[in-house]
Image 1 (spheres, rainbow, N blue to C red):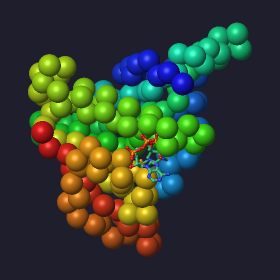
Image 2: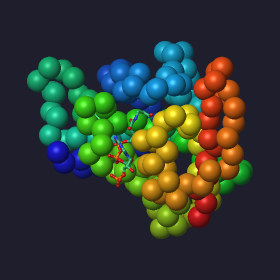
Image 3: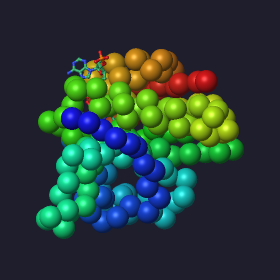
Length: 166
Ligand SMILES: CC(C)(COP(=O)(O)OP(=O)(O)OC[C@H]1O[C@@H](n2cnc3c(N)ncnc32)[C@H](O)[C@@H]1OP(=O)(O)O)[C@@H](O)C(=O)NCCC(=O)NCCS
């Protein structure tokens, strides 16, 4: 499968949001409600990146979306910090390198001076301590564990806070 590009979506179309919500449900903890999702169109500090597969052309069914994964960030320009709130790849397409491709593109976007004038220095995230696949993905890109935060997602569901610096 070929994945062509990442695009930044400011105002998410309904069909795209539907697909993103479906993919979000596969996140082990922290899936969002419809209300949470509608709030991202109201706040310009949220940035949504989608990974698209151009070979999935569903136009004949009036379905325009080709989304296979997404990453959602909250930007804090004052702190030169972005918070990775969510990253997910469709279940059947996981472990094929797509999470790596998506995360690399977003890191390049935020941390590469050519692309963003070096506006951001740090990417911060929380991840459930049992989510081994995601932790391996973040470590691959040199995210460092800051500390463990007990009961972060609920009783006995702990998180690591991780940080990537330039
Ligand atoms: C986390 C997630 C985005 C990774 O996406 P992916 O496309 O499966 O990841 P990749 O195939 O690029 O693999 C990235 C790295 O993760 C690790 N990894 C991924 N799946 C793995 C598995 N099943 N077993 C062991 N390691 C795994 C490997 O280190 C791999 O790097 P490598 O292949 O160079 O060794 C994906 O598993 C996912 O969507 N999970 C559900 C949502 C979620 O939990 N998101 C994170 C919290 S918000």
